[in-house]
Length: 430
Ligand SMILES: [Zn+2]
Image (cartoon, rainbow, N blue to C red; front, side, top):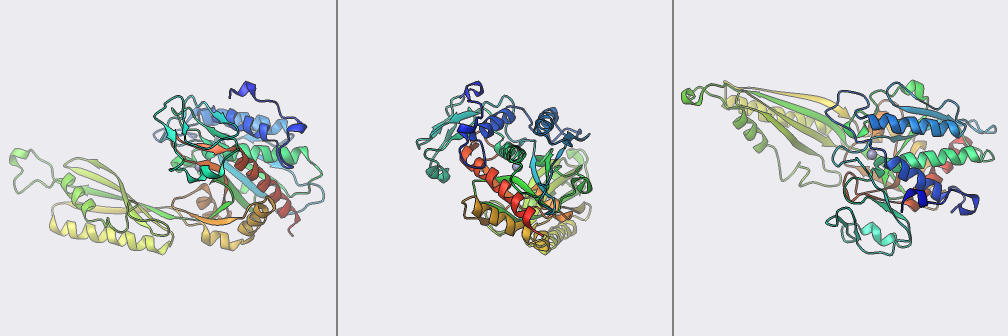
């Protein structure tokens, strides 16, 4: 449905006691249309101008809600405060979402398509009918009959990752601003840039954020709380060979390309690879190989829920390097490992209320909360490591990073309610 055809939010259309569905839908579609695709090769921060544009719009909308300190900083990050209601004194919490979308699928010219009263069945996307959201690949669709879904036209991603989170936070802030009778603690709102390319918290000043715990709204479906992420390191293997004309290479050339191939070949594959593992198993993932005869580099991701196992994986790489080096004494093989992020479980345990209160808020919103693990990282992994316990909450994201991405308005609305409950619970905590 074209956005202009959407009715304006009016009290009679309030779909449940905590949110106005049409306002939420309108917000989501407006934000989704702004191209905020992150650009990995950009040297600027944020990596694409649309992120600044969306951030400016959000800061202005937060100001219009009466949040007087709402502003976009020089890095494009938006911060604002929903002040505590007079009778509350709880610790400040932060609601966090990211403005950028994945570099994997175009975010240019997103045309959100609203499917009201979904009747079931596969959804053919009109802009590219070869793109079909199939029921057999999306078992969640079985629960969606009668609900309002939003998809793309098939030519771009939707960007529900993470504009669903942005819209949910904006609507929850609007709800608290419009209902001063709800007792709640102080809430800091934070929209970050470039999460999808691992720079989400690079310029976020935790002192300025000033929160006791954070919640990222960047999760699938409804009722899930991500309480664990991978711990992650990156290994860069640099292989230096000896290059000279092939005509005179005999006994002298050391081909770094060949050694890079041999290195990859010696990595475990039937175990410890993303292609062959699931759930709690970690892996080594060679994802980029570059170079020539004189020098080749291999980039390998090290992932595990159990942080000390990363060191074991690094030793395995060093062992492979040592053996290969011994076989080819004229080559030089160096392995450099750098930390990326850490499993948030340990940090969350320092403030168990971060998860417990989220579970309580979900129950109050009519959900049965489920603790889940992420085979990846979130902004919350790094924030938790930096001292801000930050679990990740569901907000209706499905099929992330693809043209088959979709979201469910009712799931987003429930996430709004979860946030409003969460602010009340923290406001009542001593
Ligand atoms: Zn995301």
